[in-house]
Length: 418
Image (tube, rainbow, N blue to C red; front, top):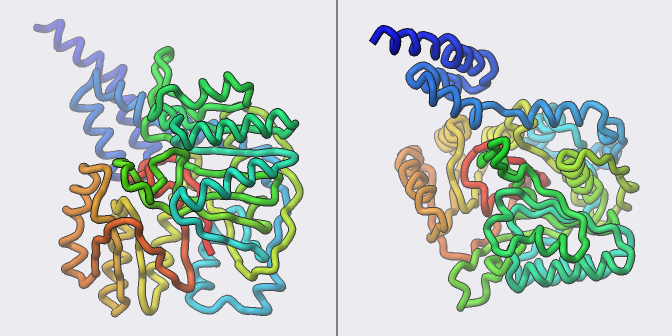
């Protein structure tokens, strides 16, 4: 018995106390720190092991080392200063712009054109056409890359581009790739197409990182045409096929103008993270005649602050007439919920549009538990069968990982704010 007591003391000294101390010093969220400290102290063997595997963000350190000498830190952008001064961003949009300027490295760029593409029926043909027309390079990143008919069509188009001398690079998420058999990486390798896996799970050393995923969906061709939004690559986004039991309605966007250069930078930074290969960014995309002003906002485990959450809180807090939220997964942070409550109490019409059917029952149940508190504050919540319509307003932000990132876990994402 005395030996067991000494073993427990040894476990506390060697594992539990260092684990709890690390959580106390390095966890930004007090709730997360308290949770991990409790786990480490109550389970002196299993607790620190779980904390070491799941609680420590090693990606942040690695990403910052790569970022310190990144060419994108000194690269100039199209700041649109004269354009904005001529047209004057009206309030309260100026408040959101100032907030973004303070926390985002990329500046507002003007002269862009953004074309919404509803479902795979509209998005996939446009994306495949861009690949077929590419002359210099094709950069593609997708969280889920299925190897059904849609995925095979993309692989064939990428292979044709490679055969005509186009530089083709693909980033696959190491976990999202497992959704389909055979894996997309296997087929890409057979065709001689260069690809990289973002944090693939490993047995030796044990590496899982379920919550540290790359949810970006990016396609850039020749630095002139870009695509981004909520759609992965696969038959699931062919929403008009009635015989498709897993069909999902979603939005993608075709981008032209200087914003494409920012999206390309995001891809090159991810490529550098996964391969440690330095690539030189292309020239800034020429300005379009459209007057859309926007910027790319990058969030993920390598970022000290939750940029997207802060911007959403700022947008809700700045709203004067209405706040329209449309999302397939609605699990907002407590701070964002508080901002929605405050907006509703001061007379702003807050409306939330959610899908009637959800492919993740657990997330749907968690959302339902949240709704009574919102309804008590006068927030309107409606359910609609797919496809969902996009609300039109003065300012909007497109969160790209909406189709597969249900929680606020630190996965990598990119967004376009307009």
